[in-house]
Image (cartoon, rainbow over all chains, first blue to last red; front, side, top):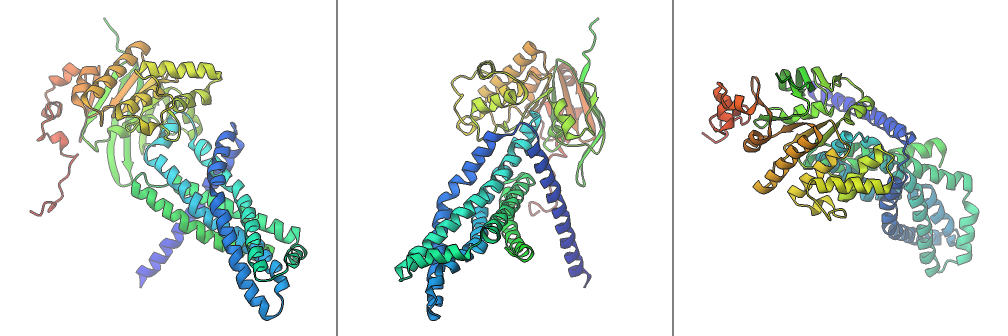
Length: 257
Length: 265
């Protein structure tokens, strides 16, 4: 009887320890962000790598999700003779929930895992130790620009996903006979800037912090072997995805976003 | 009467362990200034660990590590960075940043720690590349270089900030005999021209005995230190066995542990 209890206790302790280490790591990243030099070029390179190279997947997925929402919404609303509300349904779903969450999950899979793998490989090939021996702090040179770039690009990618999703819903809705004017009017009248748009932005920002920190932390602490890098990459995707969904609930519950 | 060179590096009663595994206990040794010292030993004997301790990349369980007279064993990372300005390190795999070109790899420490203008940085980079016998490799990425070229670029980067002490971890591993000789000659040349204290970790006995002014052999129960000639005439059979690469050497016993039943016998 004691073994399962001990195992649960060990897992709980491990979770608390890892959360503490992640918090200390986050404090170091924050401290590094305040130190000179600013590493603007490194930050912009990472914005390009994490953000610009994610544009196509975000646009394609945004249009696809918007189209599905448009189709499902149209079929449901048609039963009640309320197809004019399609713009409201698609817009609110995307802005309040699906936009930030799906963008964060997609970015975790594409950019978060790549970030972990890159840093983990640098650990395994002693590149981070090489930086240390040149008196260059790897936290400042490698980790901080990547984490900040992730935080910066997440709200922008989320906004793009939402715009593409609304366009996808519009195309499907209009194809099935929804009046274009009523789609856009419903969208405009039902969405408030403060509650919906700002809330969506905050959500995406929080997800950016989560993915950025988890991805860099797992890479930085990965075992210096190919198996270690592989395990760290998998852990990043799992932990970041779970964290996104759990935090999504709490942000929604606490702020009503 | 010639006086002995002062020690640039000194380890005093250093004990090192990774988790439960003790690498060595109460190790004391020193490396004189301006000379080439080579650390020999079997795999897993802790040779590279000594270099990583000197570089402050790992912390000992106990003992003192003196770099140019300063104990670094308990320094915080921010103060270690100042100490590392005196050190250069050639890693076994080169540790070049694989996303940067050769030029950018060499220019990085100069841009980080000096106010040199771009022309001066370029001049320094090309001077160091020429010193290690490389030209027209500026735009190449590390993965486009051969093993020997990568080692030489890494060596150029290690000396670009004019360190007092150069640490070399297995500089000859994975190299063909010609590249081995080139890297060996480079290290000797750097030592003669710049008077840099060089500590080389290697299991390449031939190169070691050609270049080292002082050799340290790490054995399971301690170390043996001496000049090349002293070690060649050393009474300990394990030293002789190591230098002649005798496979029955007791010095190798700790390196390869045959588990009971590993071969089904």
